[in-house]
Amino acid sequence: MTAPMQGKLRRIAVEEAFSLPEVAAAMRDQVCRSPSVRGGDLSLLRLVYDAPADRPKVGFLEGLLDLEERRLKEMDQYGVDMQVLSLTSPGVQMFDADTACELVTLANDRLAEVIARHPARFAGLASFAPQSPRRAVKEMERAIGKLKLNGFIVNSHTNSEYLDDPKYWPILEAAEAMDRVLYIHPRGASDGLKWPVGDYGMEAAMWGYGVDMGTHMVRLMASGVFDRFPKLKICVGHMGEAVPFWIWRINFMNSRNQTTGRSPKTSLTMAEYLQRNFLITTSGVEDPLALEYTVKKLGADNVLWAIDYPYQPTAPAVAFMDAAPLSPEDKAKVYHRNAERVFRINQENR
Image (cartoon, rainbow, N blue to C red; front, side, top):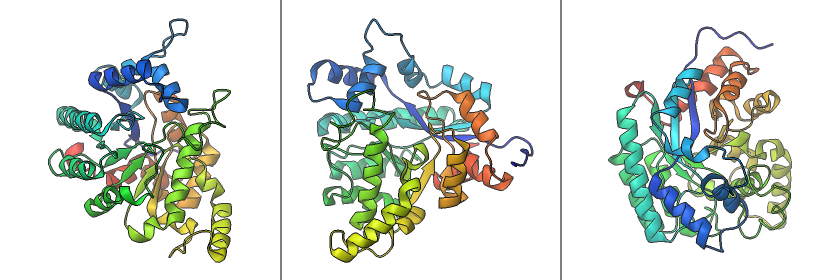
């Protein structure tokens, strides 16, 4: 049995999306003119930016663009104290490097401005353009040093390449050096994965996002990246994209692969990297059994609450966490204490 909540816990939701009119215009242009946009990315972009006239509007774009009216009213209505904001998937990773760098500068500036107006209600994760790792690092440094943002967000692969590729290691090195969490959010599957998930509505959140993001997580663990960057912290949503539930088999098979030379030798096991280097959020998975298992597997210090606003409704996400089968101490960690710690949300943000 879950112990009743003793008073109201602070509620900090940590995977909450926003956009800008300029980003929305660029995304809409991509949908209309680029034949290279396919799969889960195309599905999301059409849903948000270019819904066909014969389908009902879902209101996602309005929710992404409205930070200070509808969003705050809904937060107040359901008792959400703070949202940690991040530029919505697929971020800027579909654009050329120059366009992407220009848009992330604008997005991070606007994000810092809205946080300054509402420091008790919003924190934020900085975007960057992986297409140019050198410029990405400069923007990361600016976002923390000047804009005082709370961490970083990237949307899985870039040009179907994952962060275990050495070309992206300067980004990982910078996140580790600044001691800031890197949130890796899903996007449509990379070229090598997208065809089998392209039917029956599987290409996006139903299946494709999790397949791609889980693949990214396992690549990072199996490649030895966390031996090079042992203090790097990666946050992933959706209850860990199924990896915590498969970790026993991942661990066993990787150990065998290391013995036979198919995988690099690593200092720790896959299970140990999962527990040491990853944080998991509840975004979009309101299953009490999944939450209970994830907390037991990774420890309560490594699990954070999220809504996935505006793609997921607020009311059931709050009800789910209020009734979660956790001790009062663990519930407080998941609801707000872990977010305060890992995203540097201090008394100034209250």
